[in-house]
Amino acid sequence: MLKLLFIGDIVGRPGRELVLDRLPRLRTEHAVDFVIANAENAAAGAGITGGIARSLLAGGVDALTLGDHVWDQRGWENEIGQMERVCRPANLPRSCPGWDHLVIEARGFRLAVFTVLGRQYLGMKAECPFLCADRMLEQLRAQADAIIVEVHAEATSEKQALGWYLDGRVTAVIGTHTHVPTADAQVLPKGTGFICDVGMTGPYASVLGRETEPVIAKFLDGMPRRFEVATGDVRLSGALVEIAPGSAQTTKIELLTAR
Image 1: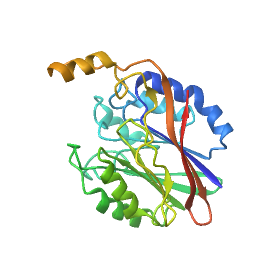
Image 2: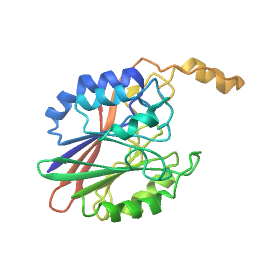
Image 3: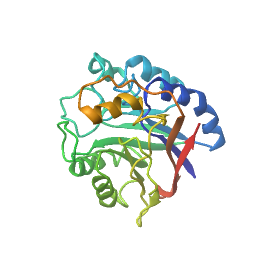
């Protein structure tokens, strides 16, 4: 069996530091072959920088994915094209810079990953994630032995629908974005692993990674406030996926958390 660890949205410095501290032990303890992490919130809770990307990759992450905060950090659009192990969502306009997928390799096995943004409750200009996935599968079929699809979306219905749509055609469909881990990790009938959301890697004594008081205050009066990244109860959250190399099907998927 091959093992993939997919790490949920890394939030700010607390999330980054925990990944760098815990990942070497987790790779050994769980005999992990591939590590993919969503890092769209890695820079102060919104976006990513070249320095942060290089630090995470040097610390043991094999591939970094991004989401709707992909362009939040000034100048990142000029750096992303130089990052060979970082990809932006595949269903953004094709004129956007950066890779729309990645292929990583371990033990002679090629694993492709790409991200699609959901379109329910997200405001970014994005192609239909279902049609984009179809296009990407045609493109990647000859380039990889297995394909992981990250669905970065708000609506659980949209994530579940995409999982069923791709069942039997990809190795796993893994949800991110909401920062709240779900209890629905499962292998679908045709062998595709699925989970609605792997949660975040960051401070859980928070509201989605941010200090609670200003968030609560904004709910009460609607006034704008700065939401600083929280610091308490920092956890790594992700999905551990076992892959049968012969069939490229998921044999087991489970939520993994570490402090």
